[in-house]
Length: 416
Image (cartoon, rainbow, N blue to C red):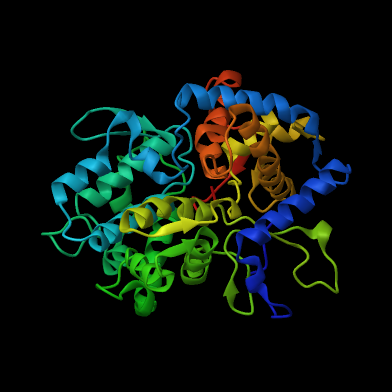
């Protein structure tokens, strides 16, 4: 089901551009699920303790000291136990923390936008190590090398920058070459990924006051803007809002209200109320929240104190969501739906993604209790990393030889 691209402005649509709006809609969906009102899913909360124990087991195996880093793109740059970014810092030797933060933002923003599902048949063989990586790790390593070799820089003497003009000119052929795409190594969603980078460049050029404060227009300019308004401290939801406000135009073919793009927000007809203009809209902002998590470490390295991490939500994607299906918290009312291909805008997928977020909120206190840790030591982003995302991947591999998610989703490279 497709969304109409424009609605008249009947309410303040900006209220949907927040993590609190994501959480509110998710918990409303869970309430409906627990009451048996959903068309496509039933919910069994009694299975959550079992899920928590499994997540704890995976977390302890991955991080025996329980020093769990944030779930962010930076973990994929460490694939294979290689500290690629740390090595880049040693080699490049940026003169100031602000310069390094700009480069880190450039890298993280581009890499996250290229991070939609690969399709299951693609892999990347890393130059210099000859090691092969697939899925998110492969996409992370491939995008790291794309930036590292200066493919997005206008300055041959400084490869570690991403210039807006170069993003606008980036082509499908450029991506296919950089990501080693071929007939035997196909990558899903190439057109959508390239479109995101092109529109990212356009957004940076259109907002010099945000992206060109200390340099020419580049995604990394956002680091300067956030530092200017933060006074040394910034709340994670404010980072998300800055991304949604300034990069909302990059998302193609999505709903807008009163000219305001709503990004990863979808129509859910069952909730429609004529007197509530926004009642049938469900926001997720998955890639934007994933990007927010990925910008925390560069901001911290610049010297900013990032607060209110738990005000962000878990991520509505197929590893976290698949965990709840594979461990029987969520069950399809019609089992045959698991074999059908679903559009991301379908009610079945909207319900599933919202339920995933609300169930992650219920899961995190159970996991903390089992581990004997508190929110300060173990925010929700650490549970995702430790954690629920890794557990979702593991059980998928145990249940299905190819490790695929339990649902088949048609994606254009701009949602998951």
